[in-house]
Length: 326
Image (tube, rainbow, N blue to C red; front, side, top):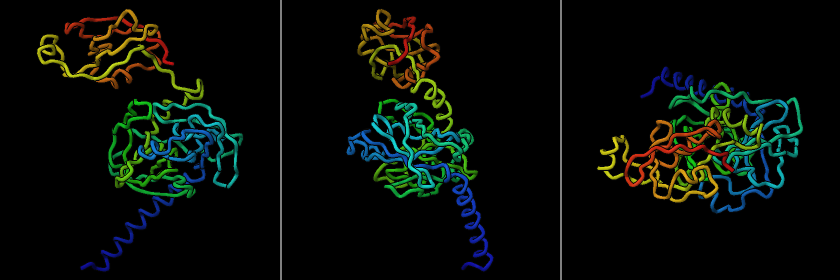
């Protein structure tokens, strides 16, 4: 049986929780906007299966006072026209500055100034169990707030391009279509993630791109309109390695990347062959295609890479100079 002290303690905890959520929302909500896209992705059934917005509406948040807004690539990609609705009800035409489908991040700009900019936090400081709050426009219900905890860190999520987004934040703060692109904030009201997807049919399985990934991507979007990456110009797939080959080659892995085809005009032409199995790059093990994607960054463009391959099941080393991905 609960005593009066127990009831008072429960009320005190509830008050602390409420104060934390209300304070974070008060600080963050003035920066959250609605983003409407005309002529973007139209395959609603496919998008619904992925747990992202089936229509042309999503969320975003202002991160500079002069009108730069962060949102999801899938909200704005391919749109003919973009409109942003500010918290005070103003409607502004927006321009796409750049988007990166591989990380599902995009930046748009509106012609307004003196806006409330949402501070960017540090997603590396997040801890499992930490209170987080999502703000967005699910199903058009503007500035809806949901709260939950960080359920897990370091998740991977497959982008619509097929690449993996690493270090994704999993939360049980409810997300619905229309939340995409809105901020996930901590109790200080700082953005720690960009809400991107939920597993439809699941209970509290929601995901946000970590804000530190956005910090890395945004400068490229502002400079180039996209993220520059390097490319070998080949198609491959992950395959298991025979045990005898692993032992004979002194490898510490049991999978590699089988080269299926090489672009005749790509960087690897004349260096790698169909049937080669890539097992390493610059001293790092390559066990799957995603390992190669992670290594082929902008800094690798035009720089010689040492690729370790199994050719006719014998270990060989090949030098390739990656080109810029198109």
